[in-house]
Image 1 (cartoon, rainbow, N blue to C red):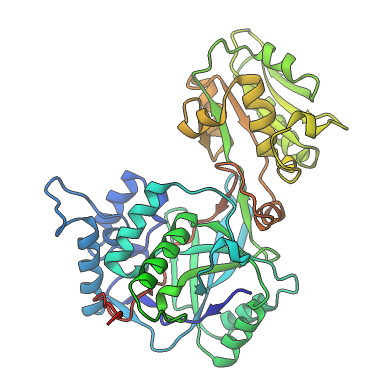
Image 2 (cartoon, helix red, strand yellow; image 1 turned 180 degrees about the vertical axis):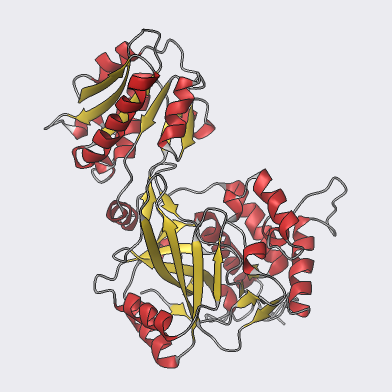
Length: 457
């Protein structure tokens, strides 16, 4: 079902461009401060291509996209970026510390060229909706550079871990071709797999797999749009043309080191907010355990107990809550769905699959009925913002920047796979796969030459 091919990647030449100075986080994770840091780190930093600077005098001939294309072509010409001599797959490992803990993990996958499939084909599945703005930006960049510089993060399931075994063998047979530590302390390593027998074994093992997009929905749909555009310009489309594929990193859901972080919700600008009123509204559906405190000394102990208890009650459908309050005695709460609660009654507008997700339970069972935060308000971020770190979400309430914070346990990868392969999507900000895949660690050209050629003649 999934067609995966080796490809001749373009990669930075470490003799001319040290990896730790030229690779970047994904374009949508680059803050303004990070952007300036990347620009200052090296003249060949990928930021020039991935998310370049715009200027007031930009024109149709000289703009962010044309400068990206010129920079990339110049780097290739001057061997700052070089193409590998033979088609290959690329082992990609990330050694990292799970945020908020001291636990070290290693996530292992491989990079290849995956066949672009329409969702209707039942081979590639999305797990979230996309927005038009980012797709238009990425499409214009692809039209100019003809190059995928960012990774599509794809999930597949291989219970026997046949591919993982091949990857481990490849790691043991040589030193990594790429190794660096990023700004988050993540150690990234890359190995080249060009041996025909290993390449073919991976291709065969992937043939019956379904793929779920973990990260990169906008870039995947951009690649589809570009493929369709090129097909329309070609009299006899080639099903194996480079633009029929996209660069993807494939991660086994049954492999070690896969981490999904929760994304917590922080609510503000709520009219007539009253935690006692909210609690009364939720009483028929949720039990509440309070972790009270009166001063900062007691607060630290209560917070630790609250966070531990929330994690321990993961399987029982629990959500952490921290409301603002004026009384001398404050508290954190763990709301737990009552045994036997009729989810069809509480969540009548969502599918049975979605009812099993804590994030849906929060949005449909608490935010909208108890706080009046509608899906439209969520989309516009009128009342709701998001925090990865639990401490930041709780601190927003302490500082008066929010009226209430909701803490979630992480979504399970099997839940993501079940929902996605059923053709449904999860709510916004349901998953945070950590760490992110670096842009520029490999690059994939979607045209045979940098100059666009119309093959319809």
